[in-house]
Image (cartoon, rainbow over all chains, first blue to last red; front, side, top):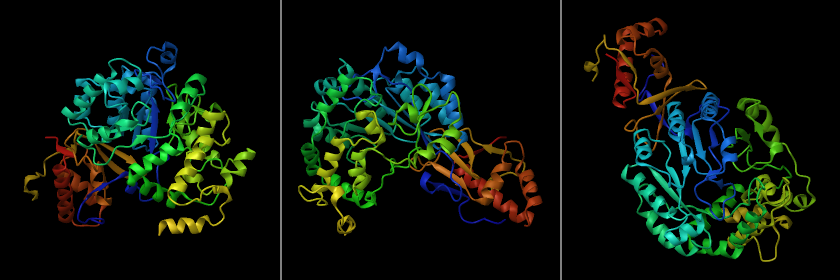
Length: 389
Length: 101
């Protein structure tokens, strides 16, 4: 028989799976709810756990299952459930099982507080095939609950971690750099290193976003006050040499010819269904003028016909054109239309915070001199070549 | 190696996996714990494997599967029988298929 050789069955990762055609959809994010049992001081999306208006607008179980069907039909291999807190949904187990029975690998983002023995058993028996991602909001009750603003949350978080560990469910933890937790990094990393499955130092949420729906100016002011300053961000780089190394690698890969194209990220390749059944081009971009209501159209149409057009949109904001469109560091800057929308309500107004952070990082690794502006640099290719060398 | 496989045996996809066909590829995704190596969780089949897989419906016997393939392939029945048994052994070892009878 033709094609016969050693190994009829080939073990592959998602990146090496496709020989010719690739499916229209690879990974889908689904936000199961915006509600959360934490009330984190820095959160860009959460709504109160008992927000009945939000709950009433959330996708029904049947709607989520239909979206999973559509995603699998389009070839998706991975679905990531995020929130809010995904375990608040009483139908979480049903949705999870449905996704797995469709042959989807599942990434779960959770604070683990709502984990039960039954759910841990389910995740052990029917594994998600991706590590569960648990965000740790502090290593002590005082710090955790200063961030989450919920009494008793720390004990529930630790119980959730214990359940995952006892049941052998693969998981990773990530931290947050906030005023109540910044002096706990050593403790956190020491604890994380002892967890099964934590082969690398844990990641952190470094640079905070404002409210993505622009729905809470008071929260925006609070979040802005919690952000790492450029000096603090540099201190984090000094603390962890691996961060500086990965920053250099990122620069070497991401430095590119400056452009006035608004999206520099392959927008629409990794879409997100929000809690109410609206398809966003990505997890963070919630500008209603760019989203697609799945109640009135198909995911296929959005991915094949609507979102690709965004990749041709060009910036018009004069300040963006003066700075970002001429900046060789744009590929490593957190500035993007989603961040502009959250900060300014437009898609191309530069976000000074991210610009300052990026310039400070570039100075740290020697790409910029003091006082130099990246949009004025003409020999950036030579600088990047030196960096690679 | 293949003495354990009976010609009148019936084999089909295990209930511990989900098989998907995407862009012409048959992709086997473990469903239950203990299938495959969880750090590397996707399996696909080579060209021969795909043709054989489509015959493993949990209804046809191994001999009937070989007969059906012999009708399509320009190869001797013995050769096809050897290949099908080789694939089946691999799939059984990985718990991707199970004996239906």
